Image (cartoon, rainbow over all chains, first blue to last red; front, side, top):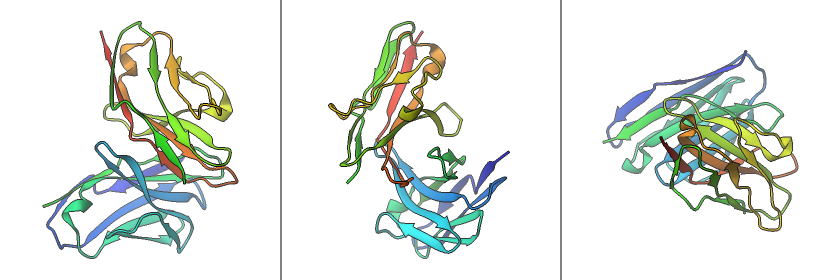
Length: 111
Length: 110
């Protein structure tokens, strides 16, 4: 069966420090991959999505970037974190059909 | 542009009473509509989608193109229905990107 992992589960980082959040999917090939940010009162905001290795589409201009070095690996990064980057980050995957499957999320606090 | 509006951030309903979570959308084409749910300490997961036209856990949702709505309904609320509910929209033509509403936290009062 397919599973999706995210790590770390929680992270506290100072302003100006770099960020790397990782998401991996098991049990499926060539999935579409997504990064969302979930903020209180703002729902889920799509940040990036990828339909294949090295193919990244950005949905909103921001301080973050994404990469897909392998078929089932999706990384969310930043060179210098801002206070406004705090939030709950969700990774999701889908294959052909329209249902998306979500990971457990990473709680990021920028201090 | 795609937009999903959930006007209620919080909704409290007594057990056994009917539930209706409102969702309105804006999209120029033919959308695919979904309801996702997040129970306490669980992952966000799909509850139902309009193309399936099925009832899940007693919930149904009908797409009303005239009113651009996709309200989620259940005739008799149960305590285990307490959760965060998100309405989401995907554009037609193979576009699988989802646009989510801001969510409604449903609390069932025993």
